[in-house]
Length: 251
Image 1 (cartoon, one colour):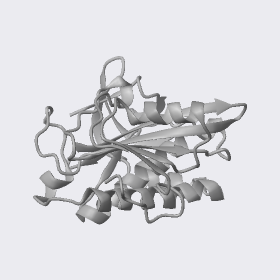
Image 2 (cartoon, one colour):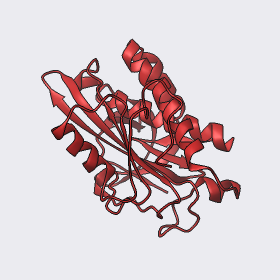
Image 3 (tube, one colour):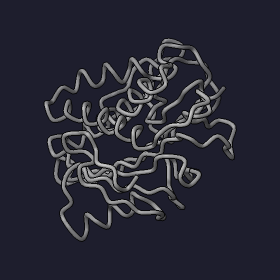
């Protein structure tokens, strides 16, 4: 995998492969402090021992079976108030790549978990460095379950488990980064409206009545994402916006 060269414009053209590491996001952060890595540089490993997900969760990944990598980006045109659009385009990129590979429905669970059949197949952790009114750089960490079939939690799944097929990690990686790059170019062109429309159309539970928890259990439906990336839920004809630690999805 470390000899693989990406078939893309710039994402993955420069790649640092590590047989194992604690966290590809940490390695990417170290590169940014020591040098000036090109935009789209990828840090990739076959064995990440301390990967993190949203809310501080640990990302479990069997060595050599999945994709665990980080992308360095410089989305300088994206204002701090619009930084959630980066979450949107990365989520959409991974989801679209999976739709192409699997041929089945894939959903984005706010803010950026990727689900198939209500099970998590990919997690994303984005760490932004901010300066003045814009994003100076972003480190995009992605974990994608590809060929692993045994999981410590029942709410996880993989491409292989879904299709009973074994996948070439290089091919899947190439599909993912090309798809992400396509959406990232929309940020460069300033087409934020198109990004939000695509994100909402792929959003898990959008316009469906479900149970949530936030200072108690309530029934509501997701109707929007506000300008700051908060989840807008309507309940009893009232709309409220929630941050990532303020609401939970209940089954």
